[in-house]
Image 1 (spheres, helix red, strand yellow):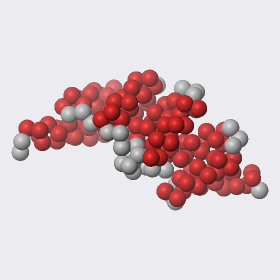
Image 2 (spheres, helix red, strand yellow; image 1 turned 90 degrees about the vertical axis):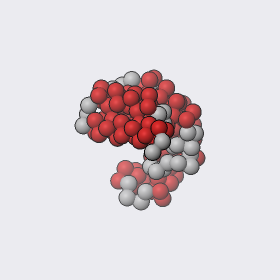
Image 3 (cartoon, one colour; image 1 turned 30 degrees about the vertical axis):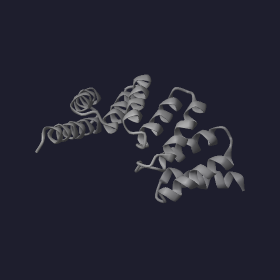
Image 4 (tube, helix red, strand yellow; image 1 turned 120 degrees about the vertical axis):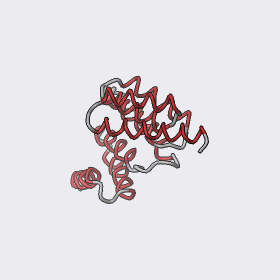
Length: 162
């Protein structure tokens, strides 16, 4: 096994350890492991998940910066676009969040593709733009028919519109 492969595997192991620590609520330790993973071999995932841990601590500007680093490494990875939008929503700037959700929708590598639709739907619903919100939530359901948030939102908005 060559040195590059061993370094990538070690970075992946550190990333997995960080994710486990984060699941346990050990954000400080998780952040250390994310940094170690990035030092070993930078990845869009490690920067995005580091941002997630920082965001969980309320460190939103740092979280956004990590997501921006992730995008530079892999512009087709959808998670950091959506996450930036969420951090901007949490900062009270939903108008700034919407373009990030649109970019997340376009990313070719994104497993949880319904999240940006849900997030945009919440913004539109909070503004009373119910038809637009309904469209976003219905799009989320097309991607994940079992999503309870989208199902509830579609039912609630449909009742309000009828």
